[in-house]
Image (cartoon, rainbow, N blue to C red; front, side, top):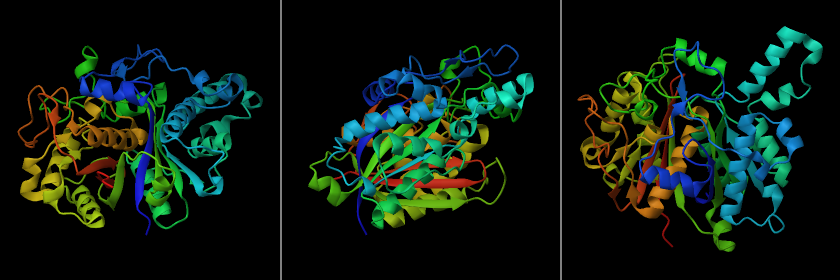
Length: 412
């Protein structure tokens, strides 16, 4: 099978509208959460979210394209453009039939759906936009990227709630391993800071209501955590077969050495308290990468800041890694970005790539009083220089979905 490496990164998220600004924010411990500005949240119990700031899609798209794309697609396209440029892909020299796209999303074009439903109710069915369906569907980000750049390889999307882009990255990796594609533009996008989305998560009691202190609302592993914070954004990674990357002299951020996928088969939203599902995903990822727990240098946790997830994931890490779990850093990117839902796995894989490049593990922010049931090393005080050779990146989703991706430092 082909070895798979990551050669390009791109992102738009609450911390920054490019990779450099995002990484600088992470290492500086900045926070992307604030009061909702995209709609009037007066009547909502939750008034905070992780919004993308100063986003200008005109840097990549023209006005006509923008009018025909949901916000989540715009975020995906701008992230993809940065990743393609970062990878140094020369479209005139590529075999475009060997380049695929797989952009995952948990919800897709919900803003378009909400807006068009309002038009239906207020003005009737004849006033619905003919672009409603192609703006809303989950696969359209992949399709639009392919159309813009001419990529004619495998093209689709996956949706598994908050594990969506993790499953997408794994699927893209397998396509390259089997030789069905040489290059995959893979990641996730979400634009769910909308009334229906925030309202839906709110009535589930899934979200933090720390409206008076947005910057500390996402507090994974803290004893007073009260829910996650919805964020919008996208992250795209360029995956290539190692041979293809070497032939064109590409820089390599990391190698995807293995992956594990499981399901709790337990509950529609709550994780199995035993932690066996995510633990099994981590074990499978290590087996696929042919490594042992002693070789894992860092775990990027799902770390949502919900009462159940953080304890269950801590239990799972200990089940999978044994005593090694107490000896390595475990970090939640969401403590600063909030929860990008279907794009979360991708932004966290991007974070891991940069951590491996810099041999630096940034902090988990907002652990004011660590939960005694969350008893691992969450790097809560200051950034840490660590030689990172193997990293596990975890994501879990409603429906019991669990994924773990094993990333490896590439050494020629």
